[in-house]
Length: 91
Image (cartoon, rainbow, N blue to C red; front, side, top):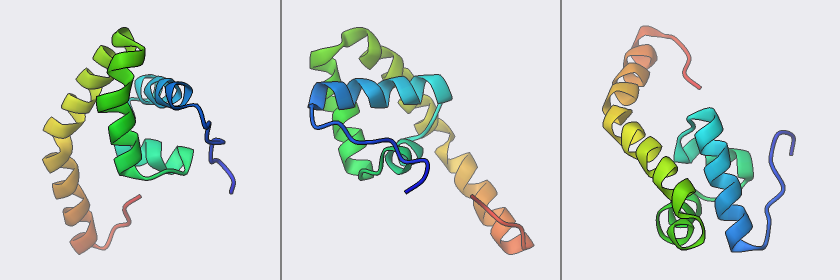
């Protein structure tokens, strides 16, 4: 698959790689899951449960981005619905 990052078996490395990706790209959990070729639940668990024990600084940065994404999610959903019924295409 093109554009998919190779998954690391080391949980600490994977959690840190996911965090770096989300911080650099201001990405969503869904986008990170797609990029790394893993499930959204795995990304969420890595970032919210595991990362805190491995790298507290990264955890705090990712947490703020995830909270921002959560607060904006209703806007993105509404925009996607508007485009759907308008005949536009969504990502």
